[in-house]
Length: 197
Image (cartoon, rainbow, N blue to C red):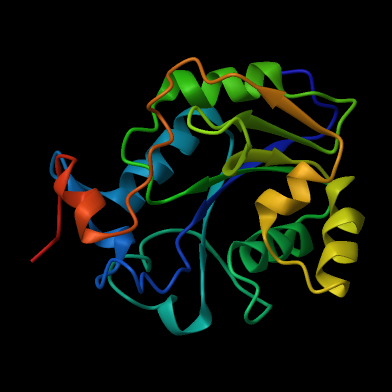
């Protein structure tokens, strides 16, 4: 890893799962919730990993067993979690991973860490589908904070747009299917992920 600052993990699990209709963090694959699996992926590669959650989720059974960073911002989507992590430790880089990526694997996380650029504020993968930056499996360095603040001040809260319009170091995915996400029941039907009962 070439970065000058420590890298901590942040699993984004603060979404409302409106399209899915049930909490994506609690979806089960191979006997493990998506949230637990994502945390394990980051804890294996990093010194420390946190779960990003909204205040009203912090005590729920799926999230309460993990070290959390509770969102300090409202109505910013995933950016709320990223900014809250940067508030928590402004001198760290944050490897952000969404909890709804059932195919994310250790090799993908290791590749991201090994190829992270100290000359860029962020490192992300190119989408295997459209070549655009994948913002929810990416590294955000401290230099990205003022960039995010400027976008939010301008009313832009889409992390992909932020990465597109920033000097982001882009990588090709070593495993093209690793970042296929699960957003809807139709997506869920195409995977081996089950809704927890």
